Length: 434
Ligand code: NAD
Image (cartoon, rainbow, N blue to C red):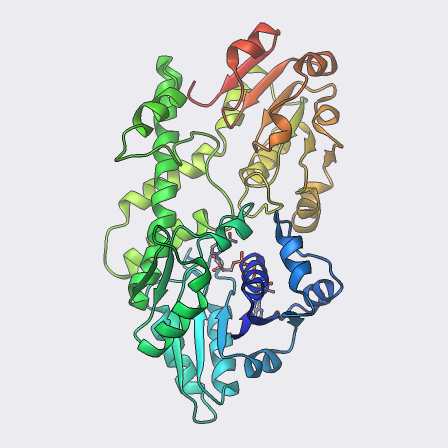
């Protein structure tokens, strides 16, 4: 199938590479010419395990990159929109990129096209896109709009795309539905079904998924405070409830709160949409509020142990989760800003996200020493704060660490260490809810 992907960011690039790998001819388009140039020069614009292999297998054969919108649109029968929908002024999903591209599509298309929205958008957006394209049509052209939300997780995006738990296709058109079913045939299995539904239902499924996962995280984070006060262990609580098949074990880890480009903005956008439709959003408002407070929990724990002013702190992990260089809404940013504000100095280590901090937070980056490894970050520090649970932090030589830190204190924001073991070695240890 001939496919265009408009927007070649995290979602668009993975989508384009993987669809080409299924044997389709794909043009990925982005308005950012620098990004396109980098990709054309074989420089991947994001870090994602397994992406380079898929990219190299297909680039120049079935996979091309351009900044020319018309070229991409006239080439393709199926046009995916993988455009940003960032948080707007009032925390709504900002649809300006989607609306602009819909207008351009109306001016460009001249034959049957399936316009597939991959971006996370509020319910009603497929209808809105259809209306905008229709109103902007310059030539008689038939088209359908499909809502096909993306569920990939950064850090496992390629695997998730190739092996999704489910594929949701929201459309009112039989013809577009059949085209989408044949496109997704390579990923359909008995236990990994394709669900055909209305565009509105598909749009709500995406927000419901993210809001449910965010709710589980805030649920555990709130309970972790009670564990702290009473001596209970939140990890055992998670195990104890997670073995109940109705609950299941995933997304029950207490920590420093959720971050990333999706959960925070999607929970806020869902709150906005609920209110806009005259519905209560109280559950999701609580989820959001708990999360905002939780980002500062490690600082509170640090303050219980030492005076932050004048201290030197090691930050282990900056990306919002392991195996990605994405720092959008990463709790690490709030934590580092707060530490600096409180008069601390920072030595930070992250396996891949340092460049992202330098690019998006140059002022913050200018005030931090970026270390070469976890030991370098820990040198002469008053405390280590584990922020992102990269594997590299799991098997360290703690005897060596003890000899290089000034004060053997570890604040474990992800509950990955064994308290007894660390205390046995002479560390002071503080974790979340245990
Ligand atoms: P991104 O910011 O990484 O990528 C968006 C790309 O679109 C950028 O490269 C930008 O230059 C380009 N762009 C913007 N306006 C354009 C235009 N008019 N024409 C062409 N290109 C344009 O965003 P992302 O993380 O890929 O997310 C895209 C959408 O997918 C969002 O709605 C997001 O919520 C959703 N989503 C993201 C993830 C994730 O893990 N990142 C997962 C599921 C869903």
